[in-house]
Image (cartoon, rainbow, N blue to C red; front, side):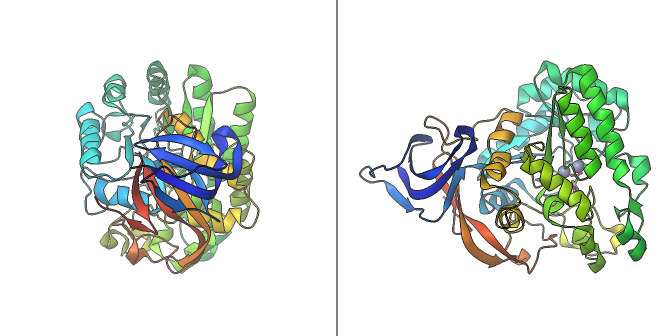
Length: 431
Ligand SMILES: NC(=O)N[C@@H](CC(=O)O)C(=O)O
Ligand SMILES: [Zn+2]
Ligand SMILES: [Zn+2]
């Protein structure tokens, strides 16, 4: 069936387009993008006046937890959370059980996603066997099986020689190496950002340096090897400075930032709500301002949720014992719209770029643009729609969000994947 999206404000950074346009989809392709398109006979017309129409949003960092941790999330529930949140594609991390360090686990994820998923799923392969950081995984096998990147995310790669070899091998397959930058010794089993707030609360701190030391090391190794380094969840002013300096010297590096590191501060930890416990930790306002400025300047390439669902019983413990991670897929868009776009700290064009063409380029996957001929992955956002976050209404099995009860504006109202409407008005459409 043809779909005509009529009268929306189309924002497509890949074409440097921000204009009122109609968009026509036939089958699984975009066939026309023009100022005024007449609906072909039998087409479904979606009126989009006052709405923002973008290429399907791509979240390049999520934890779908399957195989192995199906009590936290599954491919079925995680992809529904993605669709509800306006995402047409996600890249899923390898810290599953078994770890995605073999072709068979990558194949399992792809097959499960084909059968039970509602958005595109791109598996990330493990960097080291068992995520142990000792011996690199069979990166060629992972690439052949369809891994779009390699990463030990959830664990730092403490051994610099292992990281060097991973960058060298991944380069042969043109895969980015996604680095979770955290020096485990410096992090020293901390629970939150080390600073004024951790002192007041009496909670063990993780210094910004725990991240920055490893950002510096990985930039040096990227320069040494010529490999493609991607920095996950950048969260400090020092990381931003190191990134700027390396970029200026021509090091091949890209970086992402999460909505929570862009919009929330460590002040939230005062509640002792375990959903505020996340890695890297929430930072104070000066670090937050630095990552916002770097994103607005295009120095940070992507916005990625690091959606990290945990079961209620995992988080319903004392702050010390709770696992790190917060969910993000279903609040990412309205959080960024409310906290950054509407107050004028970030333009729509820059935000959409960080959710579309940039992650598509980094992962070398389809989509990222609404140019005719491309895949019909589209997101429609209502910038005026205001709703209160209710974790009990999430499609995700994870309810670990510090945003519960917050009023946010700018919710996605339709998600289209390959010409199929998978979400409308916040509800996932089952076929
Ligand atoms: N971000 C987190 O706090 N947790 C992630 C791991 C990670 O992204 O490093 C998880 O898998 O739960
Ligand atoms: Zn991580
Ligand atoms: Zn992660």
